[in-house]
Image 1 (cartoon, rainbow, N blue to C red):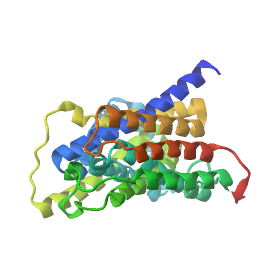
Image 2 (cartoon, one colour):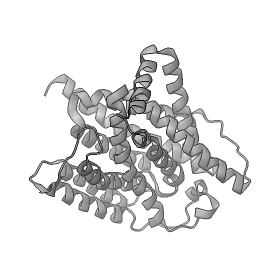
Image 3 (cartoon, one colour):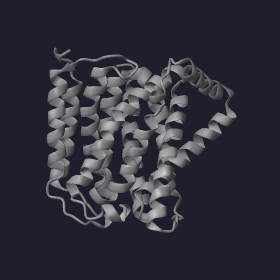
Image 4 (cartoon, helix red, strand yellow):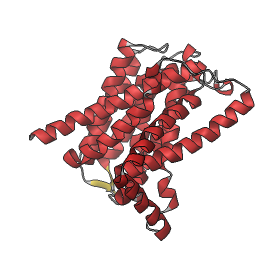
Length: 322
């Protein structure tokens, strides 16, 4: 195995770890603000600010965005293909809403399972830039194992953890199973987000796709947060700890790194190694800096089963359906 391939695998693992760390940061910020949507808005906003500075300083990046606008005007890029940021906003919002209540590990297991199920549909429909990919028996088995992992991860968890402070008043007291369903739904959106962002990246490159993603996401989050603040009448008292505002920067970093590493090891290996890194980092974070949800044997078992599901789904077998 050559040095570039080894570096790519290590970077893929680090990308997944970055996703888990971002989840912990956004979850902590959501709990501190008593508002997970506000945490997501801050995360997206800080990431967008970093990107805007980069684009302001680089004529090459601005030219890339010009190509995206030209493709939209010419119809080679459809308007719905630039809306991947809506799913990104949902994912980050779910981080802020649920991580403090259910823990990084349960969040990760649920999100990965949802992403795996959604990828079957996205690949079959050919939404991404790689075209149609048939549904194989191995992918179906992997999805079934992932569903079981989510069910196991949710077993034995109690209601009413203090992390629920990140939830709006109307959502507090929800069964933990429904709280786990939120990141699963966000994971479903991730596959679609990656597919349409890939279409934008084909035209303008990965950074143009990232800027489009963040710009669309921040609009959606600002609109939602405005409604919540108006209806609740709650004030906004941001914490002073700088580390709570690093989620957006981490998001920009791992998206950019993924755009580089995918050339070295391909999409499949990048996905497998990043998921492995995400799950491993989630367990470490829950062990070393536990939330009020803590970590349980069912959660760890669900995490392990999700790794098995990803390996099964990634294996190449004879197509089960065309």
